Image 1 (cartoon, rainbow, N blue to C red):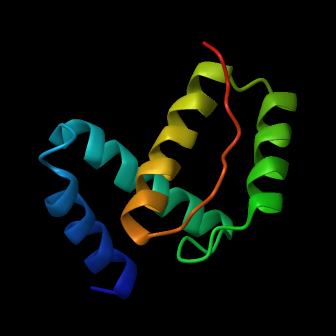
Image 2: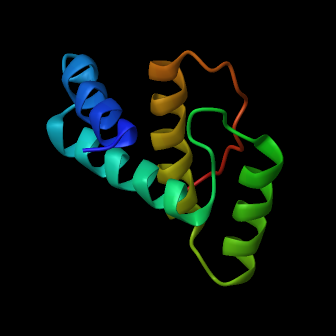
Image 3: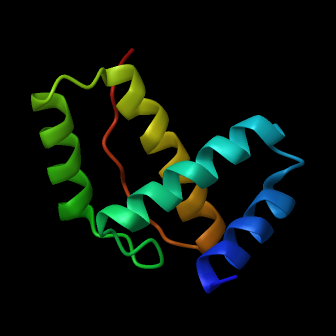
Length: 91
């Protein structure tokens, strides 16, 4: 189990009172995916995130899906103590 796996497990445990387990599992999968795509999830890079969003919109990803991913990233940022301003998408 690497550092990210340990942090994600702790993330799900500590955030459970505020969010459902399904929401936290989805958020964990999202964080793992961002990590595989090259985002340093321990030091979020806003330029990378905005570039990712614009590429995904160009390739036809729905704003609702991006909104969900940004909400998951926001939960992660809150947990890791990172003060960031993520893009907002309307449904």
